[in-house]
Structure formats: C-alpha cells, structure tokens
Length: 349
Ligand SMILES: Cc1cc2nc3c(=O)[nH]c(=O)nc-3n(C[C@H](O)[C@H](O)[C@H](O)COP(=O)(O)O)c2cc1C
Image (tube, rainbow, N blue to C red; front, side, top):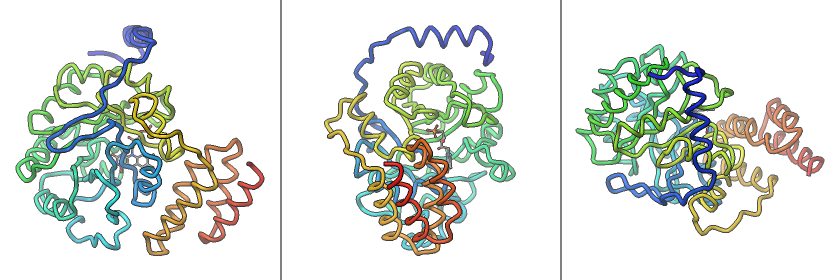
C-alpha cells in the first residue's frame, strides 16, 4: 500500500527520476495478437476530438502507432450508420484503429463486437477510466473499477466473442490502495485483456494535477501484458521522463497531440529512432487543413462544434491563444470562425 504525497512516494519518485538521466533506446513495437503497434505511441480516445478529420491530420505528420475513436456507447453502436455518424466515419488510411466501447455491463457486448468486426476494427478498447458523473450514474467508466465483477464479465464476454486485440483503459482507482489496483489489473489480464492503458490519476483528480507515473511501475510488476502510460505528456521531454519513471511499454497521448498533432512524429523520431522527417509546421496551414478535413467528412451541422473543440486546445500554441479560442468560441458559423482565426494568425505570426 502506498499513500500519495507521503515521504515514501516522494522518495520513490526522486529515486526514479535520478536513476538514469541518459535515455535508453526504447523498444520499437508492441505485438498484441495479430496487431503490431509500431512505434508504441497511441492516440488517446477523446470525445469530440479523436474523429476521422483530426486523425488524418495526425497521420499526415506520422509517428502514430495506434489510432483511436472516441468512446462509443456499446448499446447504441449497432444502430449507428457508419457512413454518416460523426463518431464512426473512417477512411482507409486510418489504420490501425482501435474502437473504444463504453458500457456498464456485458449485455449487448456480443452485438457491439459483431458490429466492430463489420467495421474492420483493428482492436477493441474498454473505457474503465472515465470519471464523468453522467457516465458514472450508469455504473460505467471508472465506476467499473469498483464494480469488479461487472468489469470481469465485460472482458470475459468480449474475449469469448472476438480474436481481436482487447485492451482496457483505466485510471488509478478511487484511493491510494495500490493492492486493490494491482488486483484489478491482474483480473483484467486473467480474463483475457491483451493490453492495459493507465491514465495515472485517481478517479477524482483533475487534469491539472501532475500524473502519478510511478504507480504504473507498480502495475508493471504484477502483470505480463503490455502497459501503456497515459497522462501529462506534452513534449519529447515529458515522454522520456514518463517512460523512465513508469517503465511503461508505450505511451498514449491525449491533449498534447490535439495541441500539436505533430507531437507523435517528434516523439517517434527522438525517443524511438523512427526515420521520419522533422515536420515543417505552419500553424495556420494545420488549422486550414483541419477545417478542410472536417468539411470533407461531415455534414455541416457537425463542423462548428468540432472546430471549437479543436481550437480550445490548438490555440495553446500561441501566447495570446485565449483570444483565438474565445473568438472562435463566439462564432456562429465555420466561415466566421475561419475568418477570425485568419485575422488572428496574421497578427500573431
Ligand atoms: C475532451 C476530452 C475528452 C475525453 N474523452 C475520453 C474518452 O472518450 N474516452 C476515454 O477513455 N478518455 C477520454 N478522455 C481522457 C483522455 O483519453 C486521457 O486519458 C486524458 O486526457 C489524459 O491524457 P493527456 O494528459 O495526454 O491528455 C478525454 C479527455 C478529454 C480532455
């Protein structure tokens, strides 16, 4: 049992930070079943953000080992139309792609998995980490870390239904009892999960708090399946530090890759030695390409909301980014937002 914030944990953190300041070469791939994730850099599922348009911007820069959808309701999935649903639209280039399912129990998993086979999913992920109260009300997301039997049945049912790689994304749970956390992870492995992603924060911790990557090292000691570290990686330096502290087999990038869709390529090149050219990034061009990708994919009702969600993060590339974000936020059409953004770019080059 370790207690966050106590000297013991601070000491462990310090030791792991001092352990090796020279980055070792990282293994370049993870193999789970028939899926090779190379480099082991994964896109985090993010509601309203990890859709086809943004995924394509990322893969154009390169360096992504596994893409992801946002969380998808397992019960609603079979009735969605993949050609028009903004959650499901996907081009052939977006591969490999993991589909994340949100469910509170095993009912309907069979139909959802059949649907994912029809969509040619490359992997299936279960959301057991979302802390939102609306999700928790149904017993889904991180609530499943307390509803251990329900979590067990979900993974067991999925395992029976598919040979696709299965992964689970968790948080650290609701308290500092790392024994309980390790038992949960061992249970997931025992039921047939092929990979685990750990967002290294407790259930109620906000994204502002520094993630507790050392807990991932403890999880790695008790299971054999690959463990992916998630939370707080915004730069190559963060990636190196996170890998060193956690000993994880790979990294999952969320907000960092929305702010800088070329972050995968930078980490792939620097940390994993992947031979990709250094991107020549023009922020206005990335923004324009994103708008074009949205327009190519989606019916117009979906454009503005997704542009606002992206801008909220992308604006952080600028010193006065809050001004860009608020100008786009108050726009009533994509054309108005684009015009305002172009004026901002011209004045903040
Ligand atoms: C806007 C937003 C939407 C998110 N949606 C999901 C989701 O659909 N499924 C999920 O498992 N996690 C979701 N997350 C959590 C991320 O996958 C990730 O765990 C978290 O952002 C920490 O990683 P980061 O520090 O790299 O951003 C979301 C996070 C944000 C900020």
